[in-house]
Length: 514
Image (cartoon, rainbow, N blue to C red; front, top):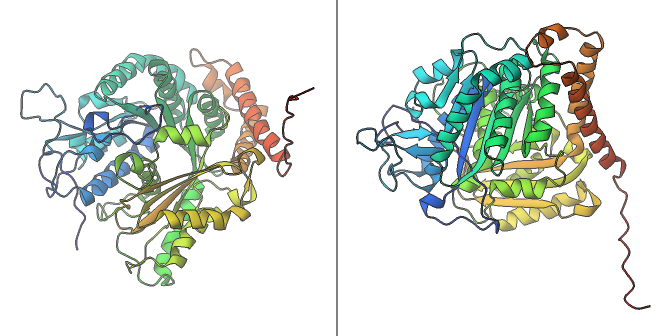
C-alpha cells in the first residue's frame, strides 16, 4: 500500500523518520499586501499546545502538516512554505543551533512549545516518530496534573512556571524574524487546558501585545464526565473574551457527530468509490494500525488549522493573511468567536470536479451538519464570513457561489457585503479541493447560554467550590466576575439578534446651505 511521504527530521523526504512542524507568527505590513517571496519576510506562526487535549491535537497536526508539505516539496528544499512552521537547523555543523536558510533540509524543528502538567502525552510525542521535531527548550511538563481545576492550572502552575513560559516564549520569538500570529490550542473542560492555557494567552499579550492571538478551544459536551467542566469553561471564557483576538470554538460532540457521519457514509456504500486517504478524519496513510480513539476527531481540528494557514504558506490567486481575518471578521472587540466548518468531508475517486459537486461544497459549508460546534448559522445573523478555498477552484466559482447563497443568508444591515475570500492553489493531501468557512455569527449564542446554565446549576449549590478557593490567589469573586463576563457577551449577541431585519436609517447630513 502506498503511503504519502513524510519529511524526516534530518536529510531526505523518503526517510521513515518524521519531523516537526510548528508555527510562529507576526502581524503583517499595514497595507495588507501579499508578502514578498524573500524567506526572511515570510510570516511565521508560533503554536502553543496546552494540556492533554491540546497536545493530542498537536500530534496529529504536525504529522498531517509534514505530509502536506511533502506532497508539494519533492526536492527536500527548505522553502518559504516550510519556514512558516519550521526552523531548519544544521545539527552537524557548529552553527549554535541557528537557522540554515535557502538550502536542503537539515533538521526541521517545529515552531512550537508543548505544555502539560501531566507528562504522559508529551512523553509519547517525544518518544514517537515526531520526536526529532522538538528539543528540550520546547516543552514544559510536570507530573501531578491540575486535577480538573482551573485555579490549579491558572493560579498555581501559572505562577510556578511563569518564568519558564516567558523564557521559552522569548526564545522561540527571537527565532522568528516576521512573527505574525500566536496559536493557542487547548480544551476548556480540564484544569491544565483551561487554566494554564488561558494563563499562557495572558503572557503572550503581556510580552508581545502587537502579535495576533488566535485560540482554538475545544468545549466539553453536556454529557462531559468532568463534573467541574462548567466552572473551568466559564472561568476560561472570561480570559478568552478579554485577551484573544480570535477564538475558534469547537465542541466535542460536534466532532463525534462528524466522525460518525463520515464512517456511516463511507461504510454504507452510498458514496460510491471514496478516494483512499481522502477523509478529513484520515491519518493520510500514517499510523493506521496504532490509531488512537480520538485521532479521527483530532484530525478534523488539525485540518482546520492547516486550512486556516494555507494561504500564508502557499501561492494562490487570492491571498489572505491571518491579520485580515481579525480585521474583517471582528467588528466588535468581544465578539471574536468564529464558527468554522470544513467541506468536503471526503473526496470521491474521480478526479474531475463537476460544477454540481463544487457548488455542493459551498452549500455544505453553511449546513449545520458541517459546523464544528452545534449551531445553525443559516438561521442566525451573520456579522461577517470568510471563505478559504484550496485546490482546483476558480475565482469565478467563488463569486458565483457567493451570489447564489447570499439570498439565503442574513447579514447585519450595516455589513451586507461582509465577505472575505482566499484561493490557495495547493489542496489538502488526498483532496482536489476544499473549503474552510469562518463565520462571525450569532449562532454561537446557544452554546454559551447552555454553558452558563450548567455553571449556574453547580454554583447555586456552591458545589465543589472549596476545591478552587483553597488555591492561593483564587477568590470567589473570580466566579461572579466570570459569570458576569459571559452574561454580558450573551447580551451583546441578544442585541444583535433583536435588531435582525431592522434597517438602520441613514444618519442625517449637515445642511450644505441655510
